[in-house]
Amino acid sequence: MLPIKDNNPTTLTPWVTWGLIAVNIVVFVMTLTLGQRGIIRANIEFGAIPAVLFGHVELPPEFAAFPPGFEFLTIFTAMFMHGGWMHVGGNMLYLWVFGNNVEDAMGHWRFLFFYLLCGVAAALGHALADTTSQIPMIGASGALAGVLGAYFLLFPKARVLVWFFWVLIFYVPAVVVLGFWIGMQVINLSTGVNDGVAWAAHVAGFAAGLILIPLFKYRHIPLWQGGPKQQPVFGVYRPGRHRAGANSNGNGPEFRFDTPPWAAAYEREKAERRNARRGFGKGPHTANRGDNGYTSGNQEPWTWQPGNVIYGEDQSDNNGHFNANNTNPQSRPRHPRPWGATPHIDADKHDASSPPQAATPKRHGIGVPGVSRPTNQRDDD
Image (cartoon, rainbow, N blue to C red):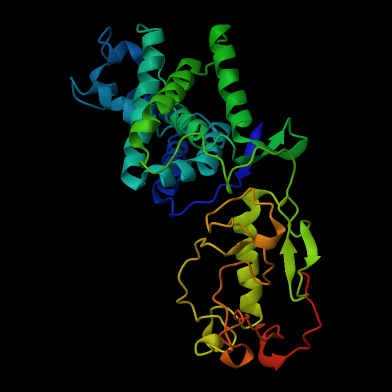
């Protein structure tokens, strides 16, 4: 299964992941300019040779890239060398798909240290399998395996779009993708397949990722996550197919509770973009607009409060506490805008004895601020 992307967004820019991908590609391109003999020499000089690491043999001075006693540094240089386009392309694809979320769970510098430490564990695992081997080991697969092991524990329920057997493309849970990957490594290692691949390094790196991730992740990041961003459902989510029609006031769409929870962020962003097109959101033409109940970009992030609605339903019980399983229809008032926007209250429309009513925001033509449209028109995009 070849991963294409996942549905797991991040909260920070994965600079370290992008930097590692860039360095690996640049080093690989540089080695291609050396020619065939130059590539072989570079593999000997900068590859991790188990017999050299354990002191069984010594490289000739003309092939030694590091002085005596510093041969262990080849473990790090070997992480950025690859044997071909398929080798570097496959490794960087996996790092692109899974590395950003692991970096998001621990921060930039800790992720870099975690990546290198997993690479060291993978190289030592491969070397311990045969300490007398004089074959250089190169590639980022060992360090990458540690990233996959961390993702396996952090986001097993995330949905990954995969290319299966080069024919089918569909979403599967990350636990299936990564479980299939490590299962193939274990099978090849146990059967003694000798095709020039360091299977022991893959298994050792994956195990290092499983062991180290509880120590490197932020404390508030749980293991084995579920929730809005992770949902073990096979198939492809089709945006907009889970609308139940107009709400009780007939002013807007309503979202049913069978909407996949991992699609909440997507639908929220889509609603914000739609409101921005209609003149309700951020932008220069709405900098001073306040008559529609929307602010000009200074709105605080929405958090659930008793009485607020999520996807058209009130999630509070009679005591004002959050209850996702609340089925009391009397405590679930409908609301035309379940996205946390502060409603504009017209004091002339109600008195102290009646509850305040949220005014319906003015609707403008798309791309033409200030041009009103009839309120009975609906845009179901």
